[in-house]
Image (tube, rainbow, N blue to C red; front, side):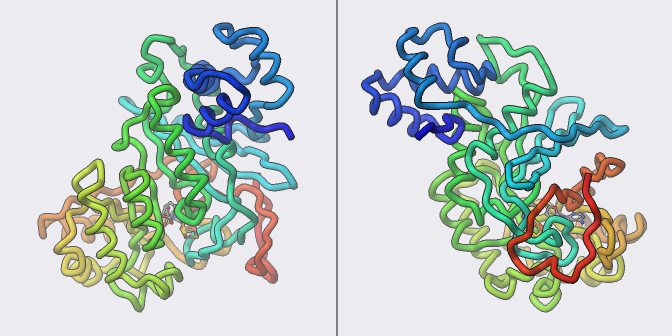
Length: 366
Ligand code: SAH
Ligand code: SF4
């Protein structure tokens, strides 16, 4: 059977190399060729013996998702639609800023968690992405943004300096593949990103937050979105299983291992739903024991969402109430909304396997 080398982190490649009678250090060379040089062709791997290159060509491939659509927004945000077979597509978004380039990476085809305000959730769920499909998004973005890659300090002139697991899907529901992909992002022989620059965003799968802490503690963002269980149950249905108190306790446990000394709480601002000054005050009480920063996200609309974005004034008042209580709160800039690349607008192409989309009218997606 042919294996796709993009599915393996350093440890996995060591096993493959020793399994065919090669020295373990070949794994590092392979990582560098694949991820630092962006090579998908064994013949080009000039410091590997010809016999090894030929052996690899008979048993392995380096296979990436296919780009089916590439669009650039007025603000420079770039979105790729990638085909992952059987009519399924995922989206990846690159957000260039003056001093960094952030890639928003997908972890699943669709999402089973069905948050009320999320376009991906509306699409239903098909399957988890493989490691190759997750790390392939970073491989493709670095290649497509086309900065020069130097062999000496490869990560210094990479296009992507930060990764946020905030694309389609719930990363912690695809734990093993996401963590292997994180290993590759952090490996100095691959992308060499620091833990502080890699963020996992979760709607709150409590046991998986604990496992992430033990296995690969990167920066953590929690999609909070409501100051009490009654409202959060409606907006983020997984709250019925893991209510706010348990979620905040998991955040407390995470902090000693976290690369940053705070947890980021994401809070989507929905007009008339969760955006009043009273909600902000309730929130302050709720998080008083958790070192945290708030990221307020103006709701990004999509067809038939049933929600409206909070007014700029409501967002300002909400932020001021939090800040007057000594909390750090920023308002996320909306990027790339003219190409439906903003938070929560990613829809890809999901062949829904759940019954979620039955009876719903879903817009055709570019
Ligand atoms: N499943 C993970 C990560 C993907 S969503 C999670 O839920 O955290 C990334 C962020 O975008 C989350 O905070 C999510 O709640 C938010 N989001 C979803 N739909 C949105 C929308 N329509 N407008 C603004 N933000 C949205
Ligand atoms: Fe899934 Fe996150 Fe969207 Fe909720 S917000 S449906 S967890 S992708």
